[in-house]
Image 1 (cartoon, helix red, strand yellow):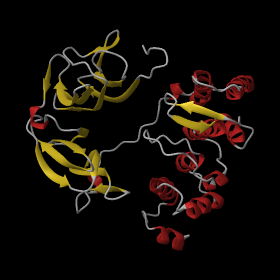
Image 2 (cartoon, rainbow, N blue to C red):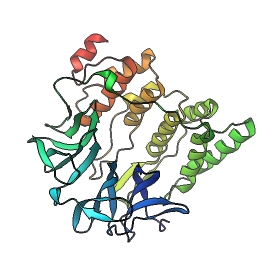
Image 3 (cartoon, rainbow, N blue to C red):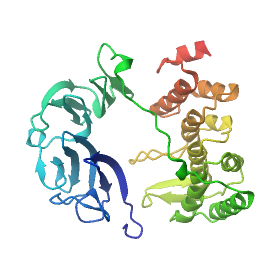
Length: 360
């Protein structure tokens, strides 16, 4: 249960011995934040300390490994669902991510723009295998038995670090899994009309809290129907409310039409049907910098959405190419545009903007 005007999130999950474990993030709620599945639902893991959050979370060799965040800092622990023990070998380290390999457990730590990659063969004693002097490692993945690390930096860009020789593709055991069809419902005309009327009413009266808008949009997303995506595409084009609104406890001021448009675009991508107007990619980035790095900007949302939709008509690709390298944009926005172009075209020019323009 989440108290009124508070936020609780399940941000990470893992499975061990047929049970699901879930990491909870809830700053204003007391109690342990690692939950385990029971016959009646979910309950805190016995012996897990109180805190504000648990993340990341991974299963390896009979244990769940997790990082708990409390008022006194962070601590890495492991549990079999019955007992809890600390991982003393990395005590005091800021762990950002964990990854399980076939013969070792890996993790990345870091603060102040630098960090390290660690490895353990028993889950207790860790040793550093690589130091990042000018980059902050935040994500680690094991592929083909080798570690890959994503970092913030060097400089203002991100980087992907990995082995000098890529693993054999045949070693990959990745399996694409579709969502169960039960998550999708059929719609008739009256159902869709009623859902859209509820959405339009919520948009017209939008204000904090956003429950009514979110519920109405969520019901449309859950249908997965092309007609719902097309209807939302029409609403993206205009007729959205004007004025300002505040988010995150009043720390961020945003235009109402930007807020609604961002969510509509994301919903279209989640449904997997519809069309995003390419001209939204060219909209100036006018969001004020904020500490939370939350930017509900049309160009950002559109870059992600067209990649998800496979929207690669000439106008869309031209708009993405044209937006590259705009000096008034934050540096990270190029990464969103490049990610969309890479997904849509299969070309791999990375951050070489001149190469993208020459190819186009």
